[in-house]
Image 1 (cartoon, rainbow, N blue to C red):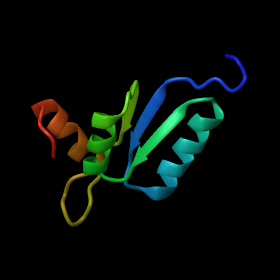
Image 2 (image 1 turned 60 degrees about the vertical axis):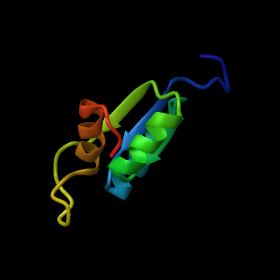
Image 3 (image 1 turned 180 degrees about the vertical axis):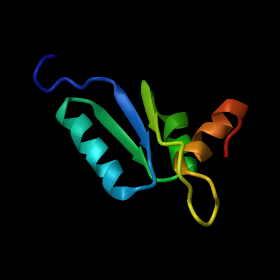
Length: 84
């Protein structure tokens, strides 16, 4: 890859801040452009407005208030093909 060239744009949907930052840092060091979202709603917003090539989503665990992970709240509307 040429120096300074950007590889595929990746969207990470993860509600755990430290994990999100770690994934972002590692992927950016490899040359990827990374878009991050801490909620499914934010993830859907970025996905619908950006040319995303790869999506990393954590679909296990849950937010104690909603009983749904950020990842699953992002993926479910895509499966139903409707915005959150």
